[in-house]
Length: 123
Image (cartoon, rainbow, N blue to C red; front, side):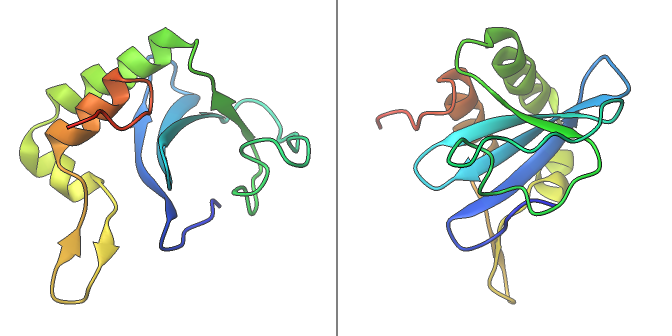
């Protein structure tokens, strides 16, 4: 279970070509981070102060941050989101629930962020 609050929240979980590994797109307030979830490995707590130590509330499997140098995972996430039909994207992304409507980032904006390795592009 990952931390969800007004500023930090998992946005979407994506499958990979390995059936035991998933990529979580996580909105970490000032940028977007990727988390690699590996169901085949046991959880090992990150060092205190390291991302994602403060956001993992509980886990039974490995959860590790994907670095900015892991270009293949960022590319995989961007391509997967880009190939999603709009309806699937809108059903799969988590957003701020205001009871009457749900606010979330647009598909194009998220793709731009993923292509920029998690940093918000300058508009």
